Amino acid sequence: MMRTTSALAAAALFAFSAANAAAQSKGPDYPVRPIRMLIPFAPGGATDIIARMIEPRMTRALGQQIVVDNRPGAAGNIAVELTAQAQPDGYTLLVGNISTNSINPILFAGRMKVNAVKDLTGVSKLVAIPNFLLGSPKVPGTTLKEAIEYAKSRPGQLNFGAPLGSYAHLDMLAFAARAGIRMVHIPTKGAGETLANLLRGDSHIQISNVASNIGAVRAGQIKAYAVTSEHRLAQLPAIPTMAEAGFAGIGSLNWNGIFAPARTPKPVLARLHAVAVGAMKELEAEGVLEKRQTPISLSASPAGFNAYVVSEMKRWDKIIRDNGVKID
Image (tube, rainbow, N blue to C red; front, side):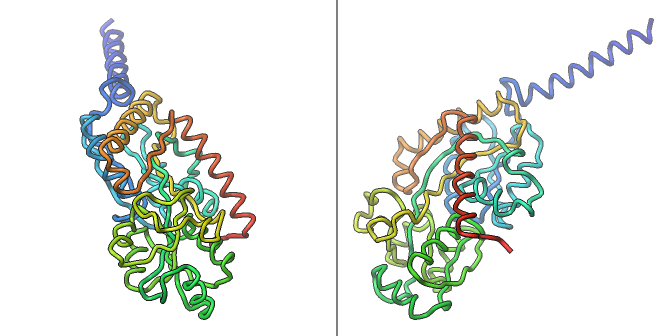
């Protein structure tokens, strides 16, 4: 009788412990400890900027500290793999983007340790940022036509910077082909490094997001030849769109969004989605997003964001196959 009672007590204790552990991530008490938010690029890029803007607002709403953790390298795949391999309990998140979550799974399929589609799940899309076609101060002239003529006179002598296999890398290949110029790609760890290269003159013509570069453009430190948005920017109306500059169809919008490990409980995803959307709406209402040129673009639900990512992968898969792009 005593053995039976002890066994029942042990079973009850085990059940209570399991229920308590589940409640920490599934129940209303989530979160009960700090949350790590991985950034796949170095500080200074758009993904890093977005993460640091939403961090204090999400921290306040969740009642637990969001710890931003930059893990650059391998074209963003290091942070993606760390997130995918983490416990699906809501305490490890990734702020990914168009490159890390819709292009890399195609280009690096044979190299990645995880399947970014199956091993991650979306929380919400956050923004869709336009990009500049930029020029270094060392490139003569002020117009795109002059920059192209300069590049044509120096085939293979000019450089462009972009993370390996990123949307900026692919968009620059498409631009160079359309413009009839030949340039050398310099791999970077993010838009911050890309901008530094351009300022030094190590890079000459390149595509990079508006959020990371608008300050240098306004200061006259670098040249913005065109913008990838459908319409001209209200804050810089003199800069033409890519279509107006003669390159319709070239260039992307750099979307960013939050991801979690697959099999993260749905109640946790729903809580994170609501808090992330609330944080972004606060930023929009305060005028922060307009000032930083980071247009808000939210998902209605985690499932909706997953569907969007799949559609983006299909689009980029066609672009990659049509252009024969391979990462050696």
